[in-house]
Image 1 (cartoon, rainbow, N blue to C red):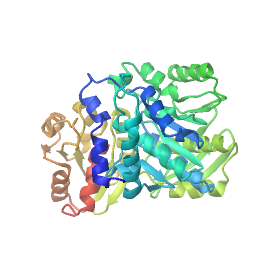
Image 2 (cartoon, rainbow, N blue to C red):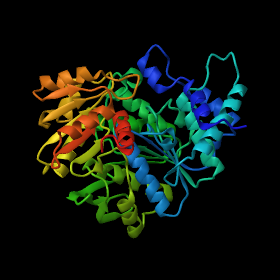
Image 3 (cartoon, rainbow, N blue to C red):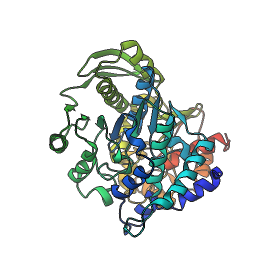
Length: 445
């Protein structure tokens, strides 16, 4: 019999997960041998539908959501696997944009708990990790529905990531930066080499990283494994125009198959035009044809990416963005200046994980422009202490204070804000997720 969802999630949490791995770097990273054995026991569900596989330091979730919306506009049933989640694990597994139900998730995990006993012992591989089990649940759920296509986001890196058991028809790389260097580094070239591992024989590589030295790493991998096609941004596809519009962007794109003019994209931030471009090229390569202009316009106007420059309140304006590294923080800060620069003053609610330099992150987030910074700990075992973040903000010349939780920080921000202020919640997707939950539960709203 299937477990109740609470019991199923407790069983899932008993397995090694990325958070514990990053908190204790003596633990070895997972390898694909264990995941392949698990997939074999499940009947290799990852092979039952074509896959678009995405990796990158920033932007891959927004790109995955855009790809999903484009494929759905063409009438396909689409399974999408993304990470991390903001509020509930269910968000990671979606079918046509809808998260897996509690009942289905509990049933999937219950089956995996039974099947786990069939894994061979004594091989030294150990139990499957938390992420491997969730990826396995996604592949099985998509196969059983069934879906016409899977849009699969890498959890970490690419080459040895659990999702890399899939044989992608299209491999998308949004960009490459220094992140998770404890596993992927120490250099950006090392990170690129790991991400290049999602390229498969016969696949198309859609590469949006424009650094020539890094692009060469991906091109070499694509040639070595026998990829069929290599498409490079600014050579084979580009954003021709990218202008501010009410509630989003007005963009024009050139792809290998077509040109699309004056498309309204319902996402905030100049960088989202590039994520949408990557999605369009991936969808074109998947279909082997351009996207009809009316369908593309429909998808662009409908695409959503929660937690990425997401407006969740007015008077005061409340914006959530899970900027988690320096490039992401800089892109967010530039978008705030461009799209919300008219707001008189801003209050920032900031929480970040250990391993991030608070001074560098706060400068990238443009914290000195805020009239007040309220630091809080993300709900994570890797949380940076709030007083450390607050002290770093004060050293930058900004009024700041620590709080004990995201909810408490939101309450304090609303106490200080006028109706004409901007409250910006940022620094980590864990903070953004907790903020969405707190706002939904009415934290002094």
